Amino acid sequence: MLDMSSARLIVGMSRLDFTVEPTMPDENEHGKDMVSITIDNTVYQIHRGKQNVSDLKKVANIALAYQLDQDVNGVLTPLDQNGHVTIKGGEIFVSFPATGSSS
Image (tube, rainbow, N blue to C red):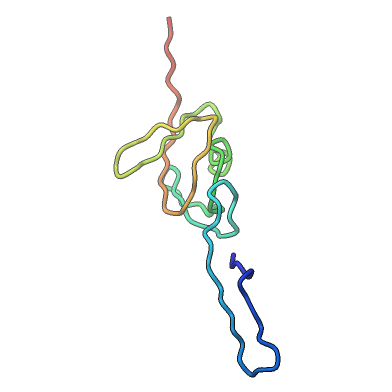
């Protein structure tokens, strides 16, 4: 989104003085831009910005009981299953059955 607060029109002249400064979207808000992410080797289009892990599971039809981890530079990084992740585009996620301890 462009910040138009610094736009000016000089009246009575043939010149338009216009300054626009681009702003980055707040990572806590869903962006309007759609980006690609990969979940279990399938590419999905999703809004850029903060996404709940549970919503990512829904997009890929993954059971909520499954674990969803993120591949960060070739290392599987556990995600807080009740938390969120900031989507910028190009992220890779992998799901698998959650493991629990049994007595």
